[in-house]
Amino acid sequence: MKNKIAGDGDLPQEKWLVAYRKSSSKKGPEGSVFVRQFFAPGYYEAYDTVLSYAEKMNLEVLWFREKRRCGQYMNRDFPGLGGRCTWCNRKFDTEPIPCGQDDCESEFCSRECMKEHSSHRH
Image 1 (cartoon, helix red, strand yellow):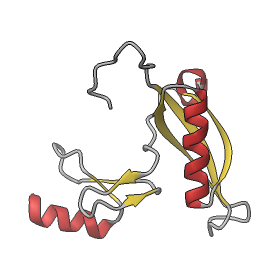
Image 2 (cartoon, rainbow, N blue to C red):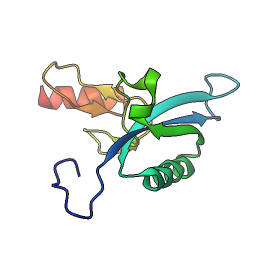
Image 3 (cartoon, rainbow, N blue to C red):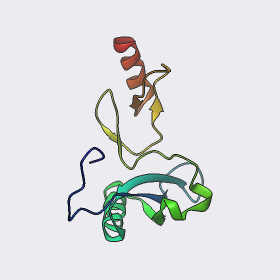
Image 4 (cartoon, one colour):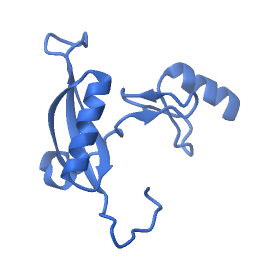
């Protein structure tokens, strides 16, 4: 949707941030907390996206808000909500692993996928 030209009835896409907690994580007694970014044209669309993803991945929503209203998070770039692995095309919700080549922008769900990509493409 980024390359689409807006029509008369289209609302502009805003960047949103959401913080989730995965209570089943083994990182600590309170679980792991992570922040993701995504695009939505308005509050209700963002709310629907956040809750749908939380239900699907069994996560607790801590907060969500427009990125331009998040002072301490403004100058940081976060992984997208529900990324896709470049190699296996599988959806994942963990931190993406970037390709080791400087001129390649591919992201992967695991080191195995990154190694396969590197051996076949670089």
